[in-house]
Image (cartoon, rainbow over all chains, first blue to last red):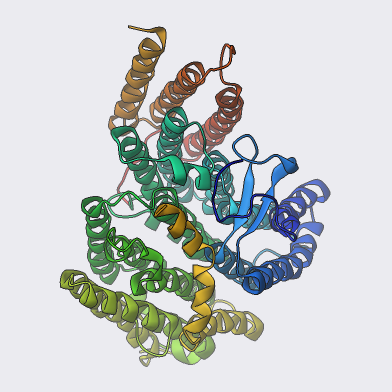
Length: 509
Length: 102
């Protein structure tokens, strides 16, 4: 290849680790499916620490070498071959998924036991799909080829949709079907954009494409189609209609993974498209449109969340709102004049928001699941007394809420403060108003829940079942992760910028 | 008009019809069929890209053809999953539409 890219032209040592990151969960899922029954949970429990180890080693490798980890499948270099690349952004997302999936897995053990009293398909399906989702997420985070990313997205959809209808109630089947139809529309639009790009530039490799793409109608059409498709999958307003019934209807561990991680994958790809595939195509107007949709999602999602009678639906609508924050980075970080959008405050703030929301929202869904289990319902108005019955769980819910509102100390606080700073320093004050309003509204809906939960019940609370302390402890740990992100000094965030300046140099060539 | 342009227009028409059906029809089965129509249009476009990209005496660029095979498998699986969900919904409730009352 005569491409003068500052990227390594061959597979880097340690590149095989990337294959391991995908294949380990996939092997686990296949084994679980083959051995069935009691083994599914055990296999998942073996894969989890191994997967964390792989993610940590990859992160260490990228941090040590300060460059992108790269692997060519079968030794074939692009454009014919398929590349896996892990830059700073990928490893941060991989690490987050590994930790969160393991936490959710520990939480789910009591709900999906290996030896149920009666024969049940739900545990087998849950553990298999949990591993499948993990493999698909890793494939999305390290995919270097747009078509390969399409396949990874579809794998993710097929693993996520059945989780919604795990308990087989008719309304969850309808929710799963609606989710699937939205996702299919999204992926086919993405594929349409990909074929247009291939037809015009003859490659689907992200690095090669970023060198060839020019500001012309076919590129605009392709990128617009792909972005629209990904927005449908990421449930950004106005494509959010499928999300609340799907995420609220799923069992608590499934909701946690769907809301925390699965919707971040399409967002991640929008970031790839806008910052990596077309770093040289300045388009402020298009970025403003994404920002406006994000702002609408923040306001409307929060307002609707305030009016929900059921706790899980409230949390699901809050996901709609929190996804909106992620899309504020596009108008704030795209600065065509300087060409270094990734070093701006908004970029880092957006990434931190993605990660802290993942932990906070997973903790809140798991806490809501425990509350629903203990009370036998999840009506917000009848929560009185639960704060005394399940103090750890309600505390964890509150900590998650802290991050959503953006109160210090929490990851959400740093993220939202960075978005605010970026909005003010960029002279785009209207986004600052949206961020502040969203924080106030989030404060409203978290307060509504906590005030009810901490109130004295009129008659003594009768719990339907008791909830073990170990499960509550897992929820609290996940919530604490979201809080601890607020204590991470900003220097390690250099990590997310590894692999970016190289692209910038190439873009300014 | 060259053959490639003709096929390109055909695929655009298929995608347009499919999009219209997917958005307007309340029946879930029709939505699934409309999705397949869009899929056919996209796969046809892959064929067009293969023909236009052909060089060095080849009849067609092999890469898009390889991509189409993968795409077909994915579309087939999607349809199977969607239809099985729809069947289950029909067995449970007797309805085949997605009412948005929830």
